[in-house]
Image (cartoon, helix red, strand yellow):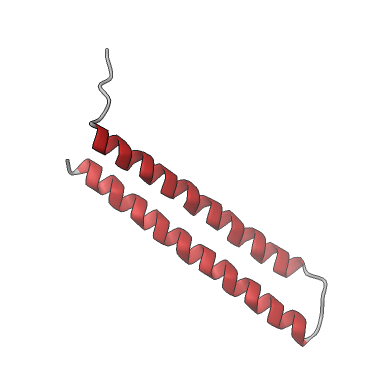
Length: 83
């Protein structure tokens, strides 16, 4: 059986959605590494705590961006499915 590729516009949306998912996953991995590094930090005192808070904030921002990219990928997928 011959597989007919999707129309060009749909293929581009699919590829864009896959790229967004890949970037989302990479950002989530970065957030996990940041959090793990902050926990493993062998540094005490107020400056260390301030540093950990900044790292946690950065990790949260990475996770938020990852969620936004994942939502965008879902919207692209929905656009392809409704056609």
